[in-house]
Amino acid sequence: MRSSSFCGLAAIVSLAFSCSEKQQPEKSGKPMTILIQPFKDFSSENVKQTAGEIRKIYPSVKVLEPIDFPENAYYKARNRYRADSIIKFLDNHTKEGFVTIGLTSKDISVTKGKIKDYGIMGLGYRPGKACIASTFRLNKKNRDEQFFKIAIHELGHTQGLKHCPEKTCFMRDAEGGNPTDEETDFCKKCKTFLINKNWKFNSI
Image (cartoon, rainbow, N blue to C red; front, side, top):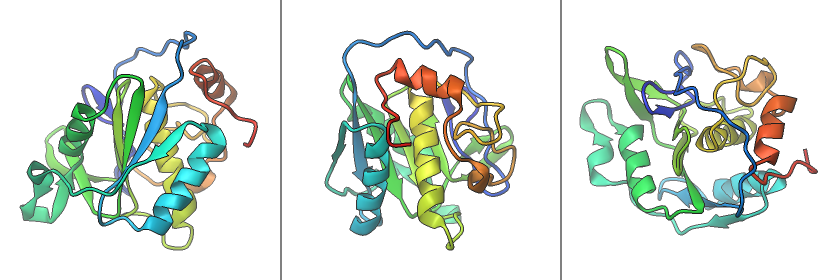
């Protein structure tokens, strides 16, 4: 969900960017490892919760020590952090065979069309080695569940998945809202794509 080269799950009134149209479910060789990179604002309890949920689908997960945001990511005018700058930073520190997802509770944003600073809930390269997810705009009532869906959506983008027309699929396009409560699983097509990327779904 992002213009040009990457996608992101955008905020309450936002959530919808399209990416390049390459989506080929060719069988990959060596399985990747998902690196969970919390920033220092993100609680250790939430890190553990998110890692546990991701492991149910993709067991090769490693949790890294919390780090500070890159200095160039802070947008002082809105007290936000630029998601594209964060992703570029994470991408530069991610080796081949790994995908890094950054976790934060801070407000994140990106440029969308003529809007210089557009608040979002998540962003990720498609395909790519990095993505970011934020709890800032989530409903307090079921924040953990919504956050997992955002995280898994962004990880799906890094694998090459684009937005899905199925309304209950984790990869659906939010179309300016927050439909995560309606999402229940990856649809059959998206799941098949990820199985060819060595993902496992016996726990879903």
